[in-house]
Image (tube, rainbow over all chains, first blue to last red; front, top):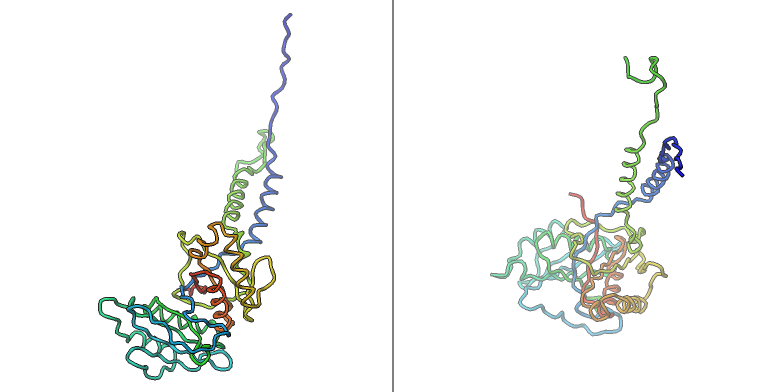
Length: 163
Length: 152
């Protein structure tokens, strides 16, 4: 028995783009609204304090000397508002002349003669900062040390506050 | 000026705009925003305003093992999903827990993980030193201070 297939008219298949587009726009607006550009942050390496800065120890110990490195110490005194009030730079040859501002400090750091054969890698800088100094001023001084080419920078409390 | 549109006695023409390229473009935009969306921003607190430094180095692809400690201007250490840490004991406990739970294992984590301190620019040196001391006492070896890179 021959069965004759009935010819059906061709079905026009259309994908509904509009709801898909609506959904895509909603997703797009969600991501645009919640988008926060990644901040351009960076970091500076710093050695952990060589001495105990907690309040339990009361002895005044000299800083352990780093091997084969010329040690320089920058002392930062803070004003009552946490700003830089006084700065000094002490090295193997003694204390440098008065430092009035951060530009002076940069000049003094540039004038350091590094150990022969080792260059600036042979210099270690310790920043002794007042407890009340603001972090932004500390970072400013660390930044100057790095701009002067010194990568070995440590952080310590000032001697009068060192336990 | 003729645009060749409907009319002119040639029968009705379809005037539906072609939405497919528009959809393609929108999906591409969605994909872009999905990829650049940073879902790990929980560790980077919005409340911290970083100081600016020109010599700060951004993280590279090699820097994979690091964790953040956010220090606000009053010296509290802000941690994701938890109360702020106020005392050195709390910071030490938190750091030891972080080392124990680290995928590298406790001993290796303490050696290899870099702790990045994100401190507010108005925080004081004593807060940084207190945090650094607690990090040292909890056994970690590497610390970095974070700053916002100065635009050149």
